Image (cartoon, rainbow, N blue to C red; front, side, top):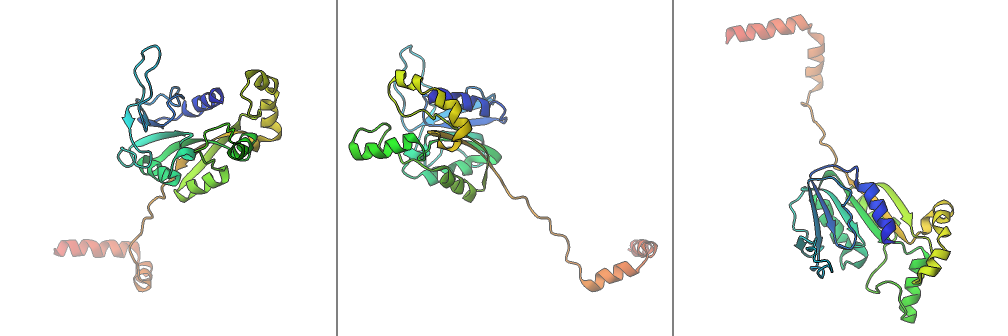
Length: 240
C-alpha cells in the first residue's frame, strides 16, 4: 500500500509549482520527495523515534492538526496522508487546510475506502477483536469527502483508487493475489482499499460594478452627437 501511495504521490506532486508545500502527518511516507518547491515542510503531532542510521528527524513542527501554525493563504500545496480518518475533528482539519492554502492552491488527501475488502475486514475486526487496521480510525467514504471539499469551495481535480488485493498479512498470499491489482483498475475501480483525491481551492472573482446610469441620462447621452459633447467639455474647461 505504501509503495502504491508513494508512486501516486510522486506523479501528482511533481508538476505542482509554487513556493511552499506542506505534508501533515505520516512521516513514513515522503509525500513531497518529487515536488520541486523551494520550501517543503513536514508536521506531525509528535516527534518520531530516531532512525537506525542516525538521520535527523524530518518533522519540523509539532502541532494539533485542527490548528495549523501557518498564516492564512501562505501554502501552495498540502498533502494529508491518512490524517482525516484518525482525526477527532476531520472537518475542522479541512477547514484549516482551506485557510492556509493560497487561491488556486491544491490539497491531496489519502484515505482508506470503506467500500472495499479492507473496509469490510475493519468492520469484522471490531466485532471479533482481531483487527487488521487501527481501531481508532473512522473510514471516510469518497462521496462524503467530496461533499466536505465542495462546502469549502475546493474543486476535485482528479482521483485514484488502488490496492485491490484482499487484506492478507502474509506476503505469500499477497503475491498470489497480485493479479487483482490490474484487474481491479479495469473491472471494479471503486472498490480499491485506498483512494487519493486532488482538489483545488477556488476563489470566486470580484464583480466589477459600473456607475448607476439613469434612463434619462442614458437617453440624453445617446441623443447628443459626439462632436457636440466634446465641444461642450472644451468650453467648460475654457471657462474654468
